[in-house]
Every structure is written in C-alpha cells, then in structure tokens.
Length: 142
Image (cartoon, rainbow, N blue to C red):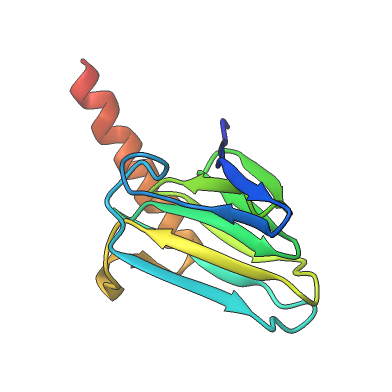
C-alpha cells in the first residue's frame, strides 16, 4: 500500500515557525471541515472507521502519534511527529489513531462536512464495502 505524506513549507526566523496551508495548493481538496484531538488518554485508539467519500490530511501539530491505515488488503503504520508533515488518508481507508504522546495535538483537514451516512464504523462491513468497490472497478475495466 502506498502512503502519501506531504511536507509543508515552514517559514521562520528568530521569532519562531509558521506553516500556512491552502486548499488545492498544499491540501489536495477543498477544505470543508477542520477539527483536532488533544488530551488523548493513554492507550486509547481513536478513529476505528472508514469513509465512503471523505478525504483527509492528518497533521500532528504538537507531539506525536501513530496512524494505522488499512485498505482491506494491506495494513501500514505511519508515525506523525513533525508539525510540517501531513498524511493523506483517502476514502475507503480504515484508520486508527493511537500511541499519542501526552502533548499530542492531531489536526484533521476534511474534504466534506460531517455526515454520519459517510462513515463505516464496523470493520466487517468495511471489508465487504471495499470488496464490492473493487468488483465494480474490475467490471468497469473490462
């Protein structure tokens, strides 16, 4: 499985650092929602879901955490620990965020507003969904 990490351009001087992000320039989609997680309790796993349409960029703006990505065939763990790096998470991708450092702040840029109907919260349903999507793609290629 290929993962895509973006390295954003930090701008800084003796006063400190700044990272500016723009939709379609630094973020590959229109940003419709931004949220962040902090004060995550040790050993807690966040996420545990997939989205049918929504795309995301995850940036750990402070501290560190790990992201487990699963496309239904392969799993990969990605460490986020730099405030100028973002992880792209495509639709139809199961995600779990875990191993948060005590000071971690994970910011998420999302391509869609909140829509419960877009979520797949059951892992077996997710596997069925991606298998059906693969079947449709295979049939379209013929």
